[in-house]
Length: 294
Image (cartoon, rainbow, N blue to C red; front, top):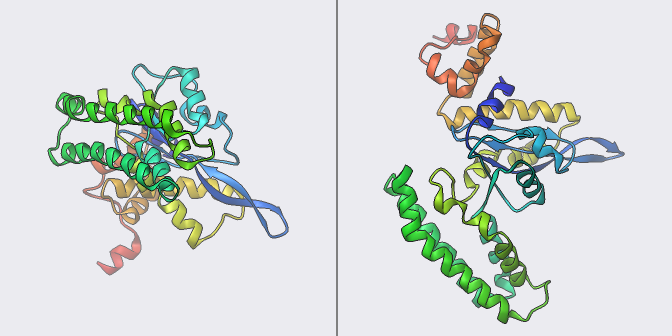
């Protein structure tokens, strides 16, 4: 089921991806290994948490595959692994405005006036996105609204960045300089959302979906083995996707754990939370405990 959910995600055109650390495995007295989940989020509100023992670049291809489908878009932060993957596969690379905005937040202590101006201009771009959501715009109407209202703001922002960057005269270690260099080098990727209505402005939807992982770091602290971490990722993939589709995870798991004994393996995709909701949610299999209470 977990593999079928990844296949569904990869079949989509726009995929968001990130990586988040997790302690797993015993590497010495009192020491846990630093490992990673590499969550991927698909267009149909499905998420998967693949586990790897490192942050090496090749893991992106191991999750998404070495070939791209026509028109595919990968939405990420600025980590070089994604840049390398999109260059190799010719997938269009969109980057997250929220990550760019955070860099200017960090620069406020050092350059409050100019960092505030950058944040103000980025905020105006986000106001357009709020209007799009409130107006429930989709498709061509959404694309044209972005081109008409967001693009002039994006152009003005980068003009300001270029002018400020030339006048900055600060060391590369200056946080504002770093923030401006970051967005200047990623302008093309940051502008992808303007011409593609299916591409979100940021990866916030993915970050909301992966909250169970950082919460887990506080609650269960670590996974004793790498195998345990892998299986934590599998169960969280199903539970989080259930919540994205307003499915009670307990009801889903009770049904599926009974249904897999009689369900054809060739139709395993029907047991992913999204498809399960369409086919089985109205009459789920119940546990003996449920029947006794009823």
